[in-house]
Picture: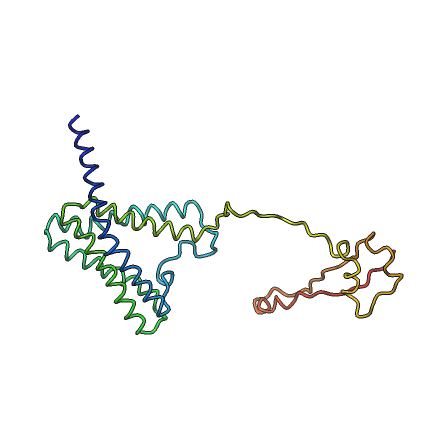
Length: 256
């Protein structure tokens, strides 16, 4: 009974801590993130430039196993691992100094691996990115370290999980094409050109006006239109010119 009561008390304490630190989350995480993204976009660096794409092939190539692995690693494993390795254990063994040193290493590790995706950019943009990235993660480190030093380590882990969670879900949603329930899709069956507009079909392939006798029977028998594909070799050099190998060819239809 006492354990149940203690569990309930701990639950309410954790909820209070999450609500108490929410303004700090906005000021030290969300606002610096908005500033960072604004500056980097202004100099031509977008977030997807240095972040690994979840699906490198097609926008709808996200499989279930890929999404499950991404969520498990990014949302649960990385926050727990980083918080314990860079703040929890250093705080346990070295106190405040350990949290400061661990957070400093955590901050520098992010631009260290992200800069490899900016190798093609000029040095000026790399320096700007290093400053914005370091400033953003430094503000994050202050937010998480504050909770650890005030005895709210579990709340820090949960905030890290929540933060990574909504960012990761946003990336996954962008990678998966979902049908919009508010849109109504109608599929229209198009009739052949000869049946739908036979007179126009005759004029389409004639430089001169068709004769009157040629109009007889049009509409009863569909005008035969043939699509001819010009053969092309499949060598690597000809692949570039493959788009030029398709053409419409006008042919006379023999009356049987």
